[in-house]
Amino acid sequence: MKKTLSEYHECREEKAFVIQERKLRTLFELVDELETMSVEEFKKFVTTTKNDFASWIRDVFGHKQLAEEAARLQNSTELQRAILKQMARDLKRLVKD
View (tube, rainbow, N blue to C red):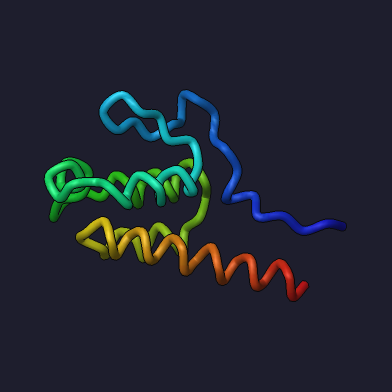
């Protein structure tokens, strides 16, 4: 049986993460968006009481471990790095198996 990385699929449009008028449908698109996201824009989604990115990662992609880590992060660079590191770990696991 072929193994996949199902948590990196493209979500349905109605589950997309909307930033201004852009609809993000994959974690890859989120990583790209975080690259140029302003601090002000990031703080619309991450406060001391909520983290919309962590919720989206958990609820839409089912990636609980990454969501837990994302929930602790307070800036776009840290979140981008955490997603990329998790992608690398998952890819390494897939290649090993």
